[in-house]
Amino acid sequence: MRNWFRDGVMRSILKNAGYLASTKAVGGIIGLLALVCAGRGMSAVGFGTVMLIHTYALGIAAFTKFQSWQMIVRYAAPAMAREDRTTARQAIRFACGLDVTSGLFGMVLAMASVMLFGPRFGISPDIVPLAVAYCTLIPTMSSSTPAGILRVMDRFDLISLQQTATPAIRAVGALIGWLCGFGMPFFLLTWYIADLGGDLILWGMSLSELRRRNMMDAFRPSLLAAPRTLPESWHFVWSTNLTTSLDSCKEPVSNIILGHMLGPAAVGLYRIATSILSSAVKPALLMEKGFYPEIMRLDPASTRPWLLGLRSGLLAAATALAMVIGIWVLARPVTVLFGEKYHVAATLLMIMAPSIIMSMGGFPIPSLLFMAGRPKALFWSHVVGTSVWFVVLIWFTHRFGLYGAAAAYIVAPVLLFLCALIPTLYSFFNRHTLSLPTAEVAEEEALAAEAVTTGSET
Image 1 (cartoon, rainbow, N blue to C red):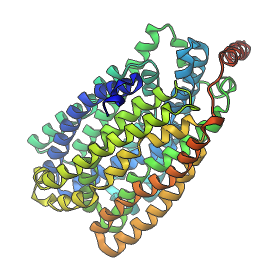
Image 2 (tube, rainbow, N blue to C red):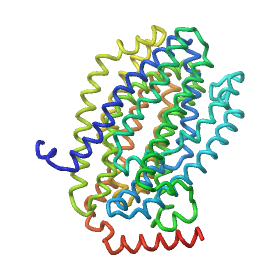
Image 3 (cartoon, rainbow, N blue to C red):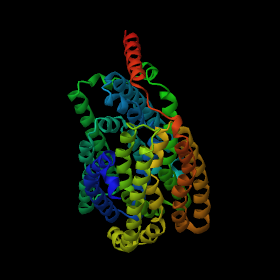
Image 4 (cartoon, rainbow, N blue to C red):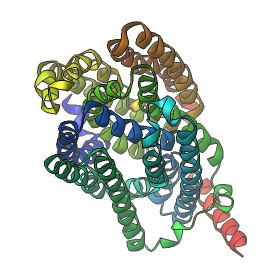
C-alpha cells in the first residue's frame, strides 16, 4: 500500500480531500450543533416541518438543476491544462446559462407545487406561505458553476473555507432561537439566511478567481453560442443532469413520502439519522471532488486512472467500515443531544449505518464512467436503482413504519453500486478504444471555438 501514495495523482487527490475535510469536519460539528439547538428549541412537529420544507426545496433544486460543475470539469480542466482559455471560457459561460435557466424554472415549479399539494406533503395550510417564500432560495441552491470554477482552478482551499459558512450562520441563528424561545418561523428564517449566505460567498470566491486570471467575461451566460464549441456538450449535460437528479432527489422525496405516510414528526426523526449519515459519507464526497478533475487529465486507455479508482474506493470503504462501528457505539449518546423525544433516531441510525460502506466504496465509479464517455450507462444504473428503491421504501414503510423506511435506506446504495459496476468493468476491459484528444485536435478545437465565439458576438 505504500506504493499507492508514491503516485503523484493519488497524493494530489488526498491533498485536495484533506483541504476539504479539514473544514468539513468543523462544519459538520457546527451543523450538528445547529440541529441540536433546533431540535431542543422546537416541538417534534415544528422541527420536522422545518426539515420538510428545507428538504423539499433541496429536492426541487436537485431535480431541476444541471450539474454544471461536472460539465466545467469535463471541458475546462483539460483545456486549462493545455492553456486553452477560450474553451474554458465557453464551458463556464454554458454552465452559467444552465444555472440561470434551471434555477428560475425550479423556483416557479416548487412554488406552484407547494401551493397545490403542500398539505399532501405534510405541510399544513397555514405554513404553505412560508414554504413558498423559502422556494426563492432555489436559484442559488441549484447553481454549481462557482464550485466547478474553483475545482478547475485547483482552489480547493477556497472551497474548504466556504464550507464552514452555512453551518456557522445556521448554528448562531439556531442557538439564538433556542435561548430566546423563538418559534418555528425564526428557525426556518435561519436556515434560509444560512443557505443564501453560503452560496453568495462561493459565488464571490469564484468571481475573484476569474478576475485574478483575467477571465471575467466567462460569466456571461450562453446557451446557444458556447455549446457549439464544446463537442457533445448537450448530450453530456442531459445525461449527467438526469443521473444526478435521480440521485439527489432520493432523500427529499423519501422525506415527502414519510411526511405523507407517517407525518412531520417522523420526518424529523428520519432527518436526524440521515443528517448524521450524510456527514459520515462526506469523506468520500470530498475525495470525489478531487478525484474527478485529476483523472480527467489522465489517459483513459491506460490502467492508471482505473487503478486510482480501485485504490481510492478501497481506502474509502475501509474508512466507512470504521465509521459504521463508531456509529453503532455512539448512536445513542449523539441522538440524545437532540432531546429524549428523539431517542428513536438512535435505532434508525444503527439500522441505516451499513449503507455508508457501499456509498463510500463506490464513489470513484461515476467519475470513471464520465472519463470513459459513458454518462448514459450511469444514468440507466440510477434509473433502475432508484425505481426499485422507491418501491421498496413505500412497501417497507407501509408494512413496518419508520423502521421499515430505515431498512429500505440500505437498498439504494447497494442497487446503485451493482448496477453501475457492470458498465464500469465493461469500460475497463475495452479501455483501448478510449483516448484523449491529440494536441493537433485540441488546437483545432480552440481555433474553431474562437471563430464561432467571434461570429456569434458580432
